[in-house]
Amino acid sequence: MLHSNARGSHPAYPVRTFIDDESVSWTTDTLYKPVNFTHPNVYDNIGKWADPEWKNMQVKERFNVGKRITYCHQGARKTLRSANLLVRGKPRNPIGRTGMKGRGLLGKHGPNHAADPIVTRYNPTTGKLEMVAIRRKDTGQLAIPGGMTEGESVPSTLIKEFKEEALRYENNERLKVDILEQVEALFKKGGELVFRGYVDDPRNTDDAWMETQCYHIHIQNAALAKSLPLLGGDDASDAMWINLDDPSLKLYASHKDWVDKVVGKMAHRKRLRSSARSFK
Ligand code: BGC
Image (tube, rainbow, N blue to C red; front, side, top):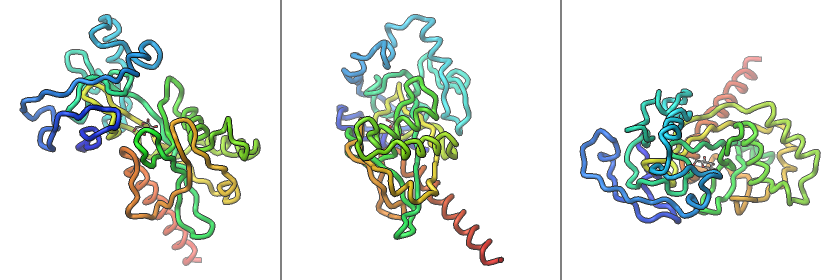
């Protein structure tokens, strides 16, 4: 995989040093002078969700960074050290150059973990597969309603982010308690793992990158899906059902890749069901 968003632009970032496809790999010899950028918001949150600057970290602290978990090697759970992602003890982007050093908007040296729920239904009128999407406030793009794990487990991040970003649950008069309980029960049953690993995110740098665990949850109960009062909250300006059978659909970061997997899986299941029916 060659990252491209991670070499592209972000509204809160300075222009990166240009990296062509051939120069992404760390093993390619090239004169490389990345732009150095860490957003002021990261400095303001050191000791909260952000690490101290690398140069200010004690030997022991640096060593502990090497123990952090990464899923960059085909989704296998490894430490940065065992995954060989440390260079002189410091984490380095597993895919290659991004044209930027520093942490940009990301708080952690190395992997910054997120969780993403793909919640789908079949539209009762069109029969098409749809997903709950949000519009991100930062880039204005459509996205899965995911978020940073911030030290919480993946299952609790999945439901928390869905409630915050797609249901604005603390401030949504249309959200009935029984609906919320049904959604929570659905998430509790657990979804199907779609992907875990490196995300080609526009915030990534040579020193910090996004990783996620993406789960699929299908709402079979059409009445429940219909009664979800979708409303954008927190990092989302809007929330809505979107049709996944749309060739021009564009989503944030690598979200389209995971959605395509879900579309493929659901189409396969549909075919199996209809061939089972024709055998009867
Ligand atoms: C988003 C997730 C996304 C991750 C990596 C997080 O900020 O909330 O939806 O997958 O970044 O791009």
